[in-house]
Image (tube, rainbow, N blue to C red; front, side):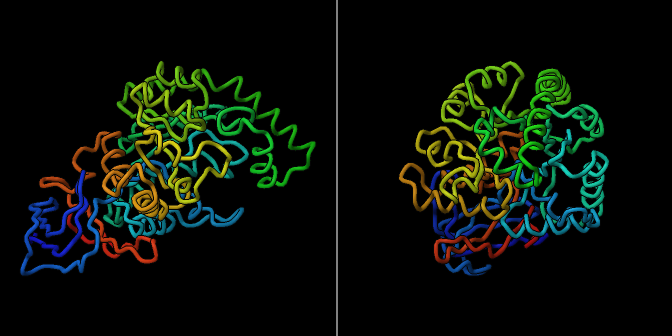
Length: 378
């Protein structure tokens, strides 16, 4: 491939922002300079940042199931999801796929595998803009969790698995009023039916969570899959995570759990929508508060892909404890390193040319161009 030169850019390096030019060739960054290049693509002072690395997005299901009882062609759903991911500046994405299904899922284990197969096929056929891996969201309270995990037994695209339990009365939903607001409204249950629903979920959790959590943790250790905990709220939850070899603490619900996870050497991950909105939609700890205390390592777009890049500029502009280079690391270098992808995540010579051109307009980052391994994808 011929060398591509980008000039007159504000280049966000790991620890500073410089004005200058950058060149890449054969998919890798070749040169970074503070001198003015004569030729090249003129950035007109726009930012040049690394391609974003997304570890946990639930967004694919919405394309596959756009309405109740509606199923879209799985390949078309994957392509729509991928296009939105890439246009949000995300060049590496871990698609979160459900393992362990309950009433909230509205889909089967076979459909989860069908979506995974659609991603696999699209990778092999060169249809996708972003680099896709699998993140298995293991609902350990569900009776079929191990069975669903078995559908991915020989799938090398699985690089991350999270152990989660959304039963009421603990973790994300200690407050039953918040749980009722979320699930009772969503499932349209009467008060008596909702009470039975909660009792069933709590009984499933008591019977299944501990043995399935341990079994999946052991399987992941054998296969070299990075393990994440989910919605830890107490020191006991963190102690359990330490015992099971957890490396990423996803969405801790209290500052105590976040601090304990960080002190134990885990990477603490929170939702970018939490940053953008200024708080948790579930009433749990604010991600901005974790930034202030130095307890946050990674951001994930969760349910709004564009929130990932938006959150970094919110932090870079509005938070006195963190500048833009540090904010960018939350969505690039840190998540890449957490899952062992050390060839990307920073703008540096020799790294992959996963790059994003960004212009800020009315405090909103506008993604103008995206390159993945030196090839323009958005």
